[in-house]
Image (cartoon, rainbow, N blue to C red; front, top):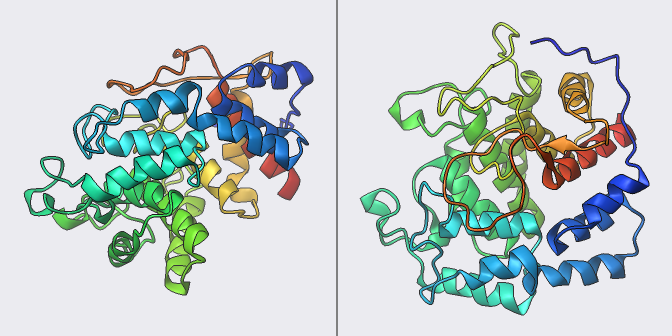
Length: 328
């Protein structure tokens, strides 16, 4: 696949598009107000506060068991576990300072372990101590740091697991010496969330920047050795040029760009092709589709269907393009 990175322009969202995005759940609305409009901070904060008590956020919070778990497990393969719901609540923007968030996270911290959800040697681990795989631990640390929990033990473990090429791979204990895009993006998000929550440490920042270069050297979706587009990953076969939400542990180009935007990286020519790919997926109404849904039991219905316009993907794409246009 070849994408011409010159014959395009960064689109600006029109009023009708913003109105479509705002005609949604508080989780979408507050982020649109913050990132795509000039709404006052007070208006953004008021809308964000609704996430805990209305719509998708309230629905997810209500599913938590008395033992602190969602889906009866710290982690499962079905997307409705404690880890997956916390991942969603973070993306919805649940305010960590809200009464509802403090109660929910406190139950997880005080009661949830990895019993039956990870390697047997991790059964007694508290949830925010994580387990063994860096892709899972990256997601745990991202959620934990986002909700003001102590995840230093996970971060220290991840620092020790960084490979020589700058990234991470869950298969490293089984003699893999090459990093995985999937694992690397999970860890990068964790390191960034930890830095934001704690002020960071030099060794954490250094590791994150090395991992960041792993993505940039490959232009976010090409092989470093040959320059060819990586059509799909070896684990699960997902295409990195097709955009999903939720992404769970899967990497794709939009997720990679979202990380760079969040990390306030100044874009250079190594991201131009990825940006052009994002632009190419915009439809005539300025919207982006949900291109992929990963199989599994979703704990909340976002009302989005594969092949149809997606408010989540449209919001995410517009933010990335705004970042690129402002800083390129």
